[in-house]
Length: 232
Image (cartoon, rainbow, N blue to C red):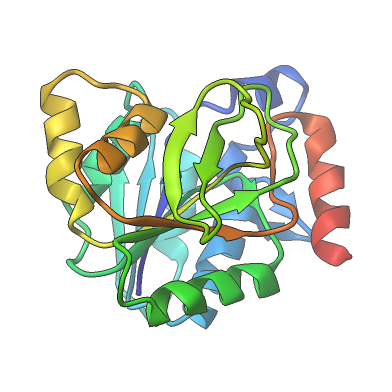
């Protein structure tokens, strides 16, 4: 399994609230968030890890360059207008095959993530598996419509009758998604959620995997919440 991390955001809200470190280097229990993800990935059969960071945080690049990992690490340094464009830049350096993509501030319990990855590695029918959660804390959540078998039918900006899950910001899929990503870029589509809709429109089979709680670190107050969560 290959892994990719989007860490190209500015982290402006954290900076405004007095956090003096770039978001990827914010520590949870003494471990930078980006390193925590990498270590989890390594314990989940990582064949390679690809990371995109922006131009404005040289500290992050310096930190990554000090790491000595037992898997290949691809580093892209580029500021992008959206997470979808960050994904597109990452796709140029990623290895073919199955992979899992997440943002650097997506926080989950390692045991939940390991079960999710194991399920996707064993899955021979679907083209992708999305981590979804009934825990809604995002300011603008992306609602995920599924059928009884947890096959994804649609991605919705607004809650609908019977809405139960939102996207957890963790996406496992095959490289069949790359041509669709390229099409989205060519058409000027600029939001990750619209890329996800394009996958459905192009016939990709996506499965939902429920994780009871996934949170993001967007504000300074979220750091303590995240530490308590992963320590539960």
